[in-house]
Amino acid sequence: MSNPQQTLSIIKPDAVERNLTDEIKAIFVKNNLMIKEDKKIQISKEEAAEFYKVHQSKPFYDDLCAYLSSGPIVVMILEGENAVLHNRNLMGATDPKKADENTIRKLYGISIDKNSVHGSDSVENAKKEINFFFKS
Ligand code: CDP
Ligand code: MG
Image 1: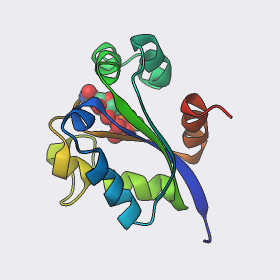
Image 2: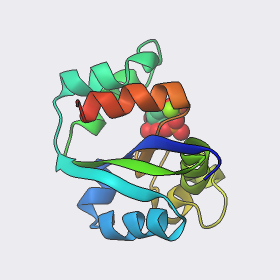
Image 3: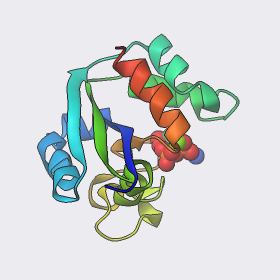
Image 4: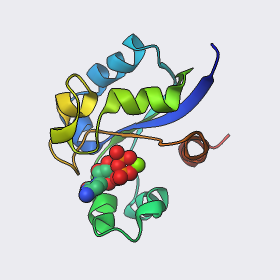
């Protein structure tokens, strides 16, 4: 591997609730992203607010934090070649309506807020987000 990376992936409440966890995990594995760690948890609204702190000035922040804490989620460390960007490409655009064919959000996303998955957007944020959920 010339550029091995780890990234954080979250299967959001809308997808966990629809029993899509195994299908989404299979997409990662099929596309050479190894699932190094995974756990199903439910977080508090306060923890969601901390996790999404970069968005605190956005109009959707409060709803976003309420949503991420509204039900069980699956958090995973994915590892592979260029894992951060590779995962973002597999996820597709934030708005499922704008996502490319066969991306996770196109296949499973319901709306811009219930878009089934989260993925770190940079190597630096991946480290912070992995540490947030998997403190060593
Ligand atoms: O998740 P992604 O990195 O693609 O998008 P973001 O811009 O970092 O936004 C974080 C999350 O906020 C999105 O995944 C959406 O669930 C939510 N969001 C929203 O509800 N309404 C928007 N207009 C934009 C984002
Ligand atoms: Mg983001």
